[in-house]
Length: 616
Image (cartoon, rainbow, N blue to C red):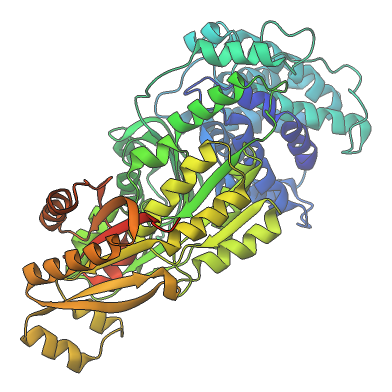
C-alpha cells in the first residue's frame, strides 16, 4: 500500500509543483512530498514485519528521517500519529483504522504553530472525521477507502475558497491534493492487488487542481502559467525554507511545544513533528544558522537544509514564461554547482542560481555544516579560542541530492570545486556525477575562497548566457590558469598546528615578527607556497601588492575579490589600496569560508585576481 501510494504521488508530483502557491509560491510541494514517500519506500521495501503496529512505526520514523518541505513534514507527523494510534496492534478493523486516523489528524495539527484552514491539514481532518462518523457501516477496507476518498476529494475542492492565495491563483491546495493522490494509490491497490497501474480504477474520479481543467488534473501550460503569475511576488517575508532532524539522546523526550514556541521568533510556517527520540523541524526564516543552533540544544542535529524560496519562485516563473507545454517543464540550460569553500556574496549566488554543496566543519570535535548550521562569521569568531578546527569534504549523498534537484530543472550541470590537492571534495563530486548523469562536468578549479568565487561567477554568467556544461567547464579550467590568490597572515599558530610549518620555524618567525604571504598557485595544482615575507602586517601587505602588480603585467581586464578571516579593517584597507593603485575596486569583499581560517588562522586576508591573458 505504501509503494502504491508513493507511485501515484510521484506520477503527479509535477502537477503539484505547478499549482503550489501557498504558503509561498516556490513550486516544490510535489517534489517534497514525493521525496518523503521515496524515503519511506526505501526504508520499508525489505522490512519483513507483518504487524501493522511495528510496520507503522517503521513508516513513521522513515518519514521523519526523509521529510522534505512543509507538506512533507506535516505528512510525516500524520504518519507518526497513525503509528501511535495502532501501537501494539497486529491487525486493525475499520473502526481501529478510523480511530488511528483521527489521532493522526490531531497530531498533525498539533505540530503546526499557526494552522490555517484550506491546507493539507483541512483535507486530512475532513477525511478523518468522515471515517470516524461512518466507520460502523464499513464492510471492509475497500469500502472504507473509496467512501472516504470521495470526502477527501470534496475537501480539496473546497480549499479553493478557503485561502486567499488559492482563490487568487484559482487552484486547490497542492499539499491537500497530494494527500488525495496518496489515498487514490492505496484505493486502486486494494481493488487490483497490484501496484502497476492499468488506467483508472473503477469508481475513481479525477481531482482537478485548477478551475480551467477539462476533467483532468494535467493542466496546460497557459493555465499553470496564469496560476503562478497571479501570485507572483518580488520579495518574501522570510527567505529560506529551513529544515533539520534532531535525535535526542536524553532519557526524557524533547519538549516539542517549547521548541515550537522558541522557533516562532525565528520565522513562520513552523512545523515541529516527531515520534520517540526523533524530531523534524521545518521553518521559513532569514537566519537558518540560528535555527540550527537552537535545535542543537535538544540533541544531535542532522539532515540540514536551507533553500532560497525566492530563487525557486523566480525559476518557476522563468520556466512558465518559457512556454513549456507540460506541468513539469522539460529541463533546459546549464546549472552551476560549487562547494561552500567558494566565497561569493549571497546576492550573486541568488542572482545566478548557483547551488553550493556544504563541507563539514569541526570545532573542538563538534560537527557543523558549513554556512548552514554555522555561518562563516560565527566560525571565524570562535576560531581563536578553539583547541582544534578542521574541515571534511561533503558526503556523497549531499552531492547526489543537489545534482538530482538541479537536473529536474536544467539539462546539464557544471560542477566547480576547491583544489583537489588539499580536499577530496572534487573527487567525491566527480564520482557521484558519474553515477547520477553523463551531463555533469566536474572540474578541479585548483583554488579556493575568493579565487574559486571569481571562477564560479564567470562560469555562472556563461551558463546564464546559454553555454553548455562542457564549454563552461573548459573555460573555467582556463580561467583557473589566469588566476592569482595571495593571502597575508596575522598568525603562524594555525600553520604550525596543522603541520604545514615546523614548530621551530614558527617560533623563529614569531620572534622576528615575520608575516608570510601565501600563494595558492593553480598552475601547480593549487599548491600553497610562501610567496613573500614581511616584517609586520603592513610590510606583508606591501609584499602582497607587489605580487599583484607583477601578476597584472601579463593580464588585461582584471577582476578582484577579497575575503578575510575576522579582519574587516584589513580587508577594507586592501580594497582602498586596489582602487588607488590599479584603478579597479574589488567586485566584492566577504568573510572567508572556514576552510581558509582552518589553514591560516584569524586575521588572514585573501586577495584574488582573475584576468585575461594579453597574448589572447
